View 1 (cartoon, rainbow, N blue to C red):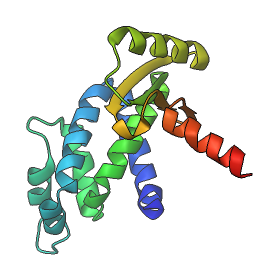
View 2 (cartoon, helix red, strand yellow):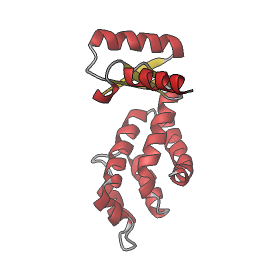
View 3 (cartoon, rainbow, N blue to C red):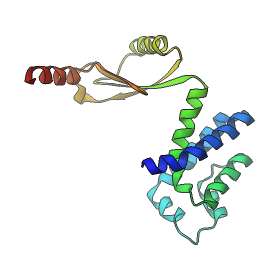
View 4 (cartoon, rainbow, N blue to C red):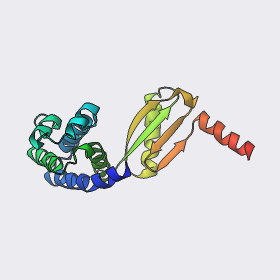
Length: 175
């Protein structure tokens, strides 16, 4: 996995540089995300590794309809270097670079139940104040948390769940 990230990083940086310079980051983001989803499919992945698959056929298989010419050239470069399997990692790294450039922090809020919009707005406001950046929130529900929520915003994890509090209490009592 870390080797794939190491191999994917220069491609992601190059793609981001091309997209930013052309002012087409959103289009590149969509195209890379689509190609990454297709390349991650087990059946497609097996085809991409086949030595008889031409680069043109591989690009036709994974490129989004109406993809920008520069995106197609980028995919052709990946195909020529036998790096199409790295598309999921390249897409993820591209999104990280884009979020950093746009000064956006992506946060995932996992709660025991669906949170009301007002509560999500309060969490978003608090995170915006803390990071001094725009915050993009993704939500998830995990009933095993019992109550409360866990907020994962990059390097910062805030565990306010009852499950987490019980685990910390158990550790304190055992030690």
